[in-house]
Image 1 (tube, helix red, strand yellow):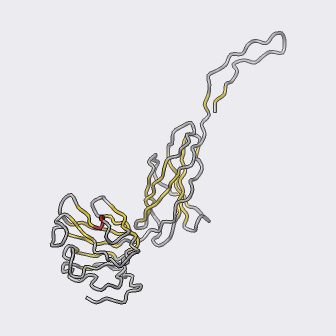
Image 2 (spheres, rainbow, N blue to C red; image 1 turned 30 degrees about the horizontal axis):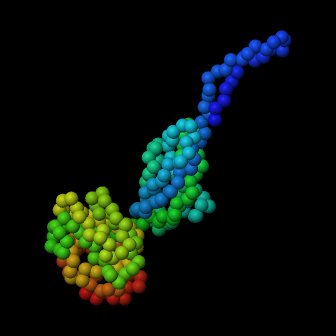
Image 3 (tube, rainbow, N blue to C red; image 1 turned 90 degrees about the vertical axis):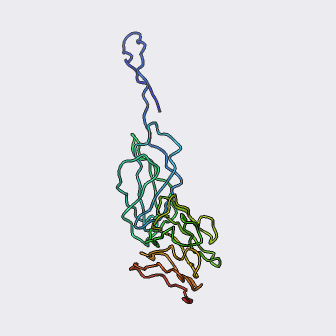
Length: 252
């Protein structure tokens, strides 16, 4: 808001003098709340993104405050990160397997504004980590990797980080993004977060391209059999225990 301050006041005797006015002043207000706060799970961390406030409090945003709760909002922890006006941040130091909600508030010269509506629950987790050599023999090209998902499974819901800075969200076994093309042939580490309940090389596909599994994470064997049949170059270095829930067929 703005207001004016008289430069002089009227006297008690005789005619009052006409006051002159000073310059107009603007009083800053805090920013409105950010919107559309969303998180992506990682290993002991969550990547957040949000939309800047629609209302301007009179001065620009100078920082964003972030807080999170692991008990559905009963208690909150403020994340101590560096000052930034970016509408994204990575919250670290979280516990895998715990579901968190997040809120963000804008900071300007007048202080900290209202907290945003909470994000959906995001659960950090250890990923399924594997290493692949794209130019080994396979059904995809020498710069590609194809994940061996199963047509009978309808509950895929995972994010795959391909090891080249790109990622995709997969919800169907035959989604085009289950095949990834790299800019150059080489060896890449692939990390998968989410729900991955079925997998089957069955002595086909890119069975010779997978070199190593260093973490099982959310991977489930499923009941197809032949999960790693023909994976002649595969070495298992993972020390965690794979999730065998519901698995009754481990043939081939």
